[in-house]
Amino acid sequence: MYSDKPNTNQPPANALRVERWSDMPKGTAPARYEVVSEDGTTKAVTLAKGNRIILDALIQQPVYCASPVRISDRVCILRRDYGVPITKEMYSNDTATDRAKFGVYFLSGTVRRIDGGAA
Image (cartoon, rainbow, N blue to C red):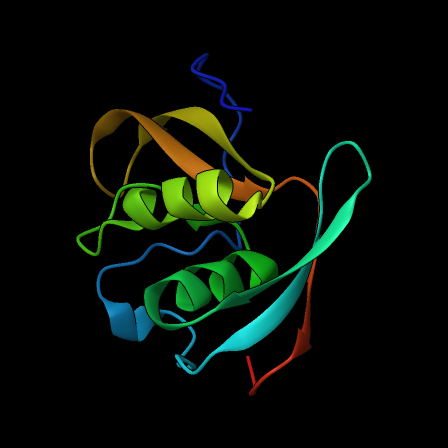
């Protein structure tokens, strides 16, 4: 799921660079999602707080990996505990941060909100 080989292309223009929690969707109340795994099985999961915020952000757009709010911790939980299909693509030369190598998270499968609050 993760590619460590740097991509020489640029990440999508709409990729979200997160500096603080307020840069992401606001809802934290429990919400249900339908997650379709790689083998085609479907399951419903309920997420709240930080896990919901990260998933709502990924549903809207790709998200830069490195951030002060520890996005990668939540991504690991979403992938491991809830089976959310999230991939990471690596890129070279981030002019905004002067990093030689950086990653962007993407939803790689189907995930949709099935109930619970606005995104």
